[in-house]
Length: 327
Image 1 (cartoon, helix red, strand yellow):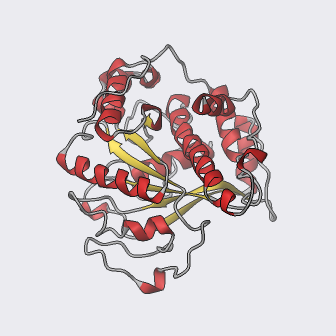
Image 2 (cartoon, rainbow, N blue to C red):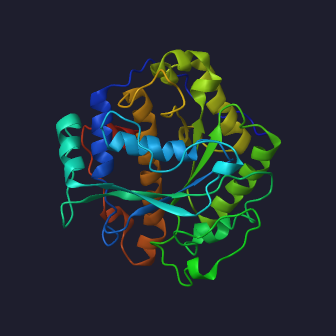
């Protein structure tokens, strides 16, 4: 096991609605530099069955649609009967009434496209959870990462490739721009997860794709967080778990995001900033990491000088987080 990566202890922090709304506004306004401004970033969710991949999607949709109820855009639950059976590209779209509600309830204004609809600058690629050690190749993960696998491709444990759902000539816009490994806090050190995470880290580095860890079910593992959602920022046990995951998989602790998710703890209700800020921060980290990697690959290859574009820095919560990451 690698030596522990030192991380400052958690400081007192409270999650506020104002911070949540500022971060959501930054995410909705995110654009890649020219000539990639029309791209939609692709984030691949991958992890064991029942880790919370579907819960992440539903919770994120809930945060972007402040209706006071839990969104259910994908089926959520555990067990083999509820495994994701198709490779799905989940888009986050706001209709005109959603845009009006977001402005009225959160003060977040978005720039609608033709027809009055807004599409978030990212999508999430939902996959089947792995079921044992050493199955990433059987899951056809290389086809997912390269952009060859298309939306709707059937997923099964035999790794069968369906040609009608394969893109023979994927472009850089089709590829995965960031991988998000979804790992339950109580299971990060199991033999199955260690084996698959080691393989995933190797594949991400070989493909030059950023990798971020979503550490889920934190409230189920740590009683202080279950009792008070705000405690996720200050709980020493959560901090220690993040450090342990960082050391186990040689991943920077700042790229490991502890999460609580809607639908798993009856104490939390939709609209809770303590649930939504860490989740939105996960998306912001993935977007910034994707942009930074694209500056060094696609932009450089097209002759666009990376330093010619600087992400606008405002006093918003998301911009402060970006500055902290870059420093």
